[in-house]
Amino acid sequence: MAIDLITKAEYKAYAGINSTNQDIEIDFLIPKVSALVKSYCRRSFVDYLDEVKTEVFQGGFKELLLKETPVTQILSVYYSEDYGQTYTKLVKFTDWVQTGDSVLSINPSGFKELINGYKVNYFAGYEEIPAELKLAVLDLVTYYRKNDMSVHSTKAPGTNNVQIEYISTTTLPAHIRRILDLYAADYT
Image (tube, rainbow, N blue to C red; front, side, top):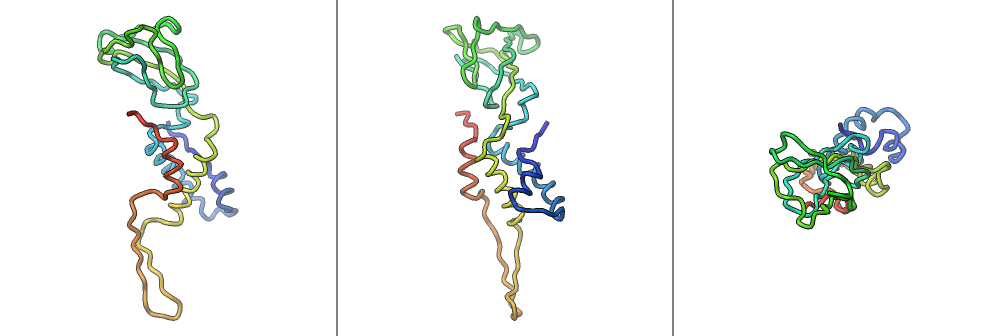
């Protein structure tokens, strides 16, 4: 499931668009830009707010760091000694406890290293996208609408000369990148 980070109505209000002339372009860009932001940040922000996210871990650590954040609820933690063919439920506050966006083992030696040894089911995401992140997504849609990364040619009035401009940047605009970097997951 892929949920867009902004709506067409939000974008049109932000861009001051009152007509339906650009609706096709906006409808095309919003899911693409949402996917780009999710890919860049390595998290979905809203996709697992109401849908269970399941992650499998190998163990070998005291803590299991969950990919989707912020974690709103950990439903269950399981372990498997047969490479993930069958799982046994671990008990909260006896075997594990939630600490922020991770699962912490109560066992002093941590989660024993097992291939496909641990499975965590949880909910995570924002009820409402943070304002600065939403602004970055809105700006990114505008960036792709206005600067379509193609060859632009302009002809000065009253002349026969045509000037061709090649846009050759491979990075996001700095003001957008700064905001996205604040929300990018870092698994190191």
